[in-house]
Image (tube, rainbow, N blue to C red):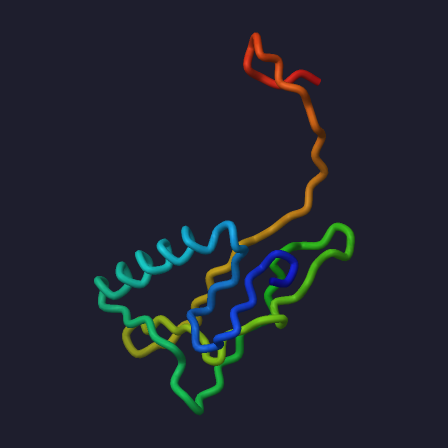
Length: 116
């Protein structure tokens, strides 16, 4: 894992970049999306071997404190492509993460909500 994001050892995988806590949900959702697109006549596949598709740099967290890390730490061997007609369009599914400050509060058992 890199910054809590999964880094699979296999590289012929769909272009999905998520954390361990969301991987099952995201893979199920991606499967539904791929089936939906297939039902509309759009083919989802890997990019053909020997053809180079360029994916722009993707930041999974817009930085407030330099914590940002670019996508290039893991990428699949070939891009995931959805064909709309004969037009290939790159498809990436990723989890967006943001650092936020949090405060610990005690829960009031009488009312069931937190008190400042």
